[in-house]
Image (cartoon, rainbow, N blue to C red):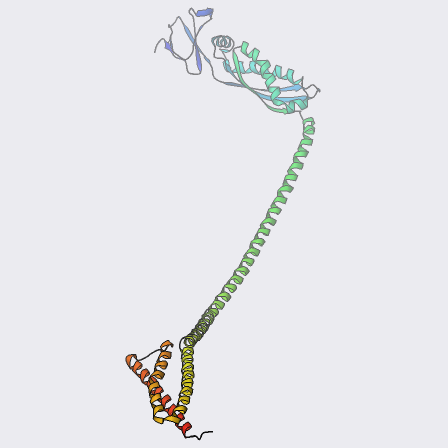
Length: 369
């Protein structure tokens, strides 16, 4: 639009030909547009972009050794109005070329001065210190001409083929080479150790596998043997157990038979024998008594003796019955068995009677002494 001007983002617009504030030679417009009266005002632009200046300077150290130093400076016009005015008054016509040349000269002078106060060893070891001192020393002059330094970097330091820097670096290079050789040897040793360790690991794995196979085979053999023994021992153990059971049962039966025999002896046989003995003794005693009476009767009357025997016959049967009553006699066939037992007792009494009668008759027939 005619009369309205807008600067680029990295530019500052300078308007001259009219009145300004703060007694400035021109009006400074940054970041916005402005109306400019045609024919009566003039508009110029100053770049606020970054510029570079490269310097290569031969310097003499504190030891009088010449060094070629190369460095790069990054700078620009400062953003404040005063710096812009100072830079515009100096570099507006040919801004880039004039700023680079002047900046290079300023830094070259301070570089030579500071290198002259240092030794080669200090410059090599403390390159950043050198750059910082040069930057600090140059900032004041750069500010006076409206420029701001962003950075100052030393790119290279060379002794021009004298070999001084190389000689300084020789011990370090030797140490580096030695360390590199040591590292190579250590690496080779490590590789060899790793290979040996791997071989040892493989060998141990193989040995472990072999021992495992042997143990498994032995274990399987033991299991098979145990199973075979168990298979054989099973029926044998059952037979032995059965034989032991049968033996125990036989022993138990024998013991029960012995107990039963003892019980029979105590409950039946011995009482019966005792009763039979008692009956026999009574019969003998009665026979003796009857014999005596018979002898007496023989001298008197045979008939009276027979009568006496007949009278005593019930008493004999009675005593026999009393003896049987105390005995533990088992009757197997009920009432019939009882009848048979009584009949037997009467028969025994008659038998005794007959015996006594015959005895008495024989005694009576015997001649008297």
